[in-house]
Amino acid sequence: MNYSIRLGLGLLCLFFITATSIAQDKLIKTNNDTISCLIKEIGDLEIKYSNPELSETILFGIDKANVSQIILANGKIMNFSVALKDPENYAANHKNVFKVNFLSPLFNSFNFNYERSIKPGQSIEGTLGIIGWGSDFDDRNEKGVFMKLGYKFIKSPDYYLRGQRYAHILKGAYIRPELAFSSYSYDTDQYYTAYSSSSYYNTSYQAERKDNLMFAILLNFGKQWVIDNGFVIDTFLGVGYAFGNDEDSFGMHKAFIGGVDEFPMALTMGVRVGWCF
Image 1: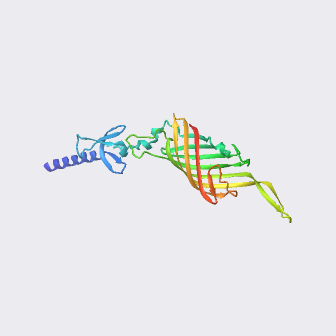
Image 2: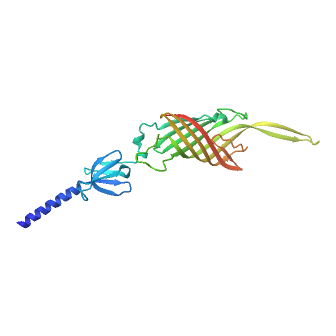
């Protein structure tokens, strides 16, 4: 009889131990360590929990930035992310911006730029330029287009503070790798010299139409300001390599400068203004 009672009590204790173990929550840290515990409170900056294996009364706390996931005892899952990279923190920020380079008409072109935020700290940019819309100082009657496609990496803080986030999802210093393409035609004068037997010569010229086709790989460094979630100012300077067909070696390709046979390096710069939406 005593043996039966002891056996029953033992099984009952085993049941409660197993039930307690099953009922525990799991806290997954960003370094993939797992803590079996009972979640007591989830605050804005900290998660509090108890660990029955260590103490029934002590309440522990962990920085929310160090937790990637919580698996509750009922099977529900809660995911967490660092405030700086949490898209929910930028829900009120406009994710698109349309910009123009207001200095480009000085170089006989006009370009439009569209930027779209992909996620906090990263965005994609596309530029379309119309060559021939601007001041044609050399009277070369340039006509054509250029295009650019880049991916922007916005600089994150050197030191992360708890709860820190970008002032705006599109604001800050950045690095932008970029591909550029330029295609246009222009007028040029071809000079011809005719010599006579009396050592006199006659020089004439004839206007011809030529084509210019260039490509470039660029790395841009810049900074963008966003004022009141609307007005945008973007300044940048870039360097890279260019190649293509530039018979007259002008090196002024609207999308960039340089890239002639003697100097394959390409340079670009600009000041853009625009509006978020």
